[in-house]
Length: 317
Image (cartoon, rainbow, N blue to C red):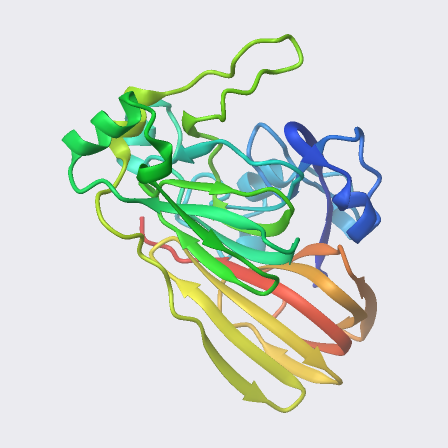
């Protein structure tokens, strides 16, 4: 039987988190400083569990290993992507992620290329996206002198904005921003600056200056240029496509018939409600639903009014 895999997943408390995951999506959050929902994840630090059908109760990492037919017999040994929703009630640290080679050598896991779709943003909200140093030597000097005003590039953001954040990009999500993040399945982050704030025990959080300088790129970040196609009852926007993943925004208004064009798809409903029809069985979709359409599903129908962020891996290894 072909059926979608609906998922239930873990929340993560963060020093910068808040309550928007409850207020916007109706999730049952564990704390008043809940920062992340790892909505589709097979990473050891937050593994999703199937919530329906014949695979109910199975962990996504185990399912990926032992049911390869569901994923088109993939090359990757581990589930390659991770979908998060982040509630930045305060600034995240200024940080950078390594590429695969550096991550595997130094941390024993993949690097992290990621991208952000801004679901909501307070008026005046900003991100840090890139830096102004012209060389590694200047980068080191500005970091050591804590010249953050001149080093960091701040950009205003609003709902609907999209940013591609390749490994090696200096970045930070600012206060008052709710985003959906699609990334490689990695939890490696190097902090460059953390606004000198202290954790609940009164300690400054660890920084990773040398590793950050090792992996930070020089020059402007490589952003993407989204491309939109208008179809009958469907507006599809390719937000980014690279060696790791392709990410779309799908806007459905009415009945849409679709066929699989990738081994499997990760879907997150960020607004609206509607239904999904697979093999004559109807599934409810609503804001906050997260699911995988496995390889065993070749065609399906959406109906209703839905906004979704959809991704699939691009097999390169």
